[in-house]
Length: 138
Length: 389
Ligand SMILES: [Zn+2]
Image (cartoon, rainbow over all chains, first blue to last red; front, side, top):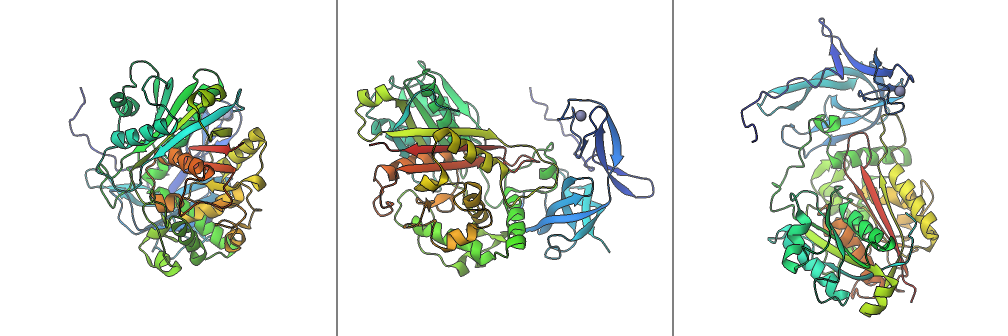
């Protein structure tokens, strides 16, 4: 029988992706395969290259280049519109799909952006879910 | 897949697309019955296997569609799901059954009803394991990212994108199966509500209901059934979408490029010989990119190809002659099968008011599917059809 008892929804997405230190510094977590050296984000287990299951956690660069960006006006439940998202290319040869912090219309392709944290959506209980985002570098 | 023996399409059916009070199974039955009668099949025990595509209407959808036709109990019915590629995939599987000799006659159906269940104004819910979905990704937005980069690199404008809608709606003007059709101006397209910049509402396919069905059979059965205008399947390819988490060019589409190349290789027919194409024009930008990905023109020349009139009636290759998804709307499990039905009717000269002239002899259809995180699309299905008579 289905369990219909209420469960608390998440408010952080999610520890495998993002580290926030005690002083509030955020860092994305890359995963380097210990057997073949491939670096991935997000964590893929096993490693899709060699099926290795041991990884070294590598802090990723905090700045990158915005490859493309769009402003969203019609969205799923839990999202306040408008908001922006895009692909951020990091120097580690990784592309991160991320929401952007800043007014829609203020981003363009090839902008330099840096990591930040913030609310990405509301959960089922109506509470904000925190995760990584990117904003324009100052 | 290289076909092991000749496979033909004996008959096709499709419903009008739009908002339907009839549920998916009733729509599927209408299309199936049309396709069966079009194949001169008038009783339930001629078909030996069936594949039924549906994405959102629940479990055992195929049996639900076919039980009232008396087709359950004496053949395998297999339910196919791969989001927007499912309808093409169901027909692909029916073709495989005939190619391998598993069946002499097989049936592929795509059917979907979205509007009875889906609340208007919202999009599909993300799964918590989908990292892009959690970050607020929506399908329109993923295509918008491709559009933004394409515009940034080529200097194309939103007006250029809007021309795709204008063209496809014009194509659909006299097509009784299309939903949104007739004249619309570039200004009306770009002045409609913004969904995901630069894609406005009129650059997005509508959420629709509908069905398509295709009966495939062996050469021997073409004779037995007395099919006068059999359409030969020259190629059918299904691909899964590669996973990416590294920088790459998204003004192309790797899965469409790979699938096209494989289709051309297996059929021995190249892009220069194609008369008509129904492709996955879920959004304006996709049609523009797919001209290039399918090799209808060189990389970077999609816009020129459109502007020169190569993709419309009288051009080199009529793209979306039925009006495409931008006119039909997109019931995601149905579209792939309905495209094939439309192509067959064009090749048989059965499209009064929107018949391509001269009557096309080589037709391609293309559906991608699924917004899986890290892929452009989770699946891609393409078919190459030819008439030999
Ligand atoms: Zn490895």
